[in-house]
Image 1 (cartoon, rainbow, N blue to C red):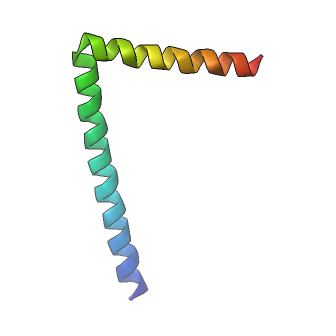
Image 2 (cartoon, one colour; image 1 turned 120 degrees about the vertical axis):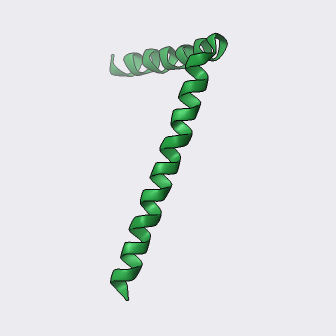
Length: 57
Protein backbone atom coordinates (compact mmCIF):
# COMPACT_ATOMS: atom_id res chain seq x y z
CA UNK A 1 0.00 0.00 0.00
CA UNK A 2 2.84 2.41 0.86
CA UNK A 3 4.41 1.84 -2.57
CA UNK A 4 1.20 2.85 -4.31
CA UNK A 5 1.00 6.06 -2.26
CA UNK A 6 4.64 6.87 -2.98
CA UNK A 7 4.14 6.28 -6.70
CA UNK A 8 0.99 8.43 -6.66
CA UNK A 9 2.77 11.23 -4.81
CA UNK A 10 5.68 11.03 -7.26
CA UNK A 11 3.34 11.34 -10.25
CA UNK A 12 1.50 14.24 -8.59
CA UNK A 13 4.80 16.05 -7.89
CA UNK A 14 5.95 15.49 -11.47
CA UNK A 15 2.66 16.83 -12.82
CA UNK A 16 2.85 19.85 -10.50
CA UNK A 17 6.42 20.67 -11.52
CA UNK A 18 5.57 20.26 -15.21
CA UNK A 19 2.57 22.56 -14.80
CA UNK A 20 4.63 25.15 -12.91
CA UNK A 21 7.32 25.11 -15.61
CA UNK A 22 4.64 25.73 -18.23
CA UNK A 23 3.36 28.75 -16.30
CA UNK A 24 6.88 30.14 -15.82
CA UNK A 25 7.60 29.67 -19.52
CA UNK A 26 4.41 31.52 -20.49
CA UNK A 27 5.17 34.38 -18.10
CA UNK A 28 8.75 34.72 -19.39
CA UNK A 29 7.57 34.75 -23.02
CA UNK A 30 5.05 37.46 -22.16
CA UNK A 31 7.64 39.57 -20.32
CA UNK A 32 10.28 39.28 -23.05
CA UNK A 33 7.69 40.12 -25.71
CA UNK A 34 6.67 43.42 -24.11
CA UNK A 35 9.19 46.25 -23.77
CA UNK A 36 7.45 47.86 -20.77
CA UNK A 37 7.26 44.58 -18.84
CA UNK A 38 10.87 43.83 -19.74
CA UNK A 39 11.94 47.22 -18.34
CA UNK A 40 10.20 46.59 -15.01
CA UNK A 41 11.56 43.03 -14.84
CA UNK A 42 15.14 44.17 -15.46
CA UNK A 43 14.79 47.07 -13.02
CA UNK A 44 13.73 44.61 -10.33
CA UNK A 45 16.68 42.34 -11.02
CA UNK A 46 19.09 45.29 -10.94
CA UNK A 47 17.61 46.41 -7.61
CA UNK A 48 18.11 42.94 -6.15
CA UNK A 49 21.69 42.85 -7.42
CA UNK A 50 22.46 46.22 -5.84
CA UNK A 51 21.03 45.04 -2.50
CA UNK A 52 23.15 41.88 -2.61
CA UNK A 53 26.32 43.84 -3.37
CA UNK A 54 25.61 46.25 -0.49
CA UNK A 55 25.16 43.34 1.93
CA UNK A 56 28.41 41.74 0.77
CA UNK A 57 30.42 44.87 1.63
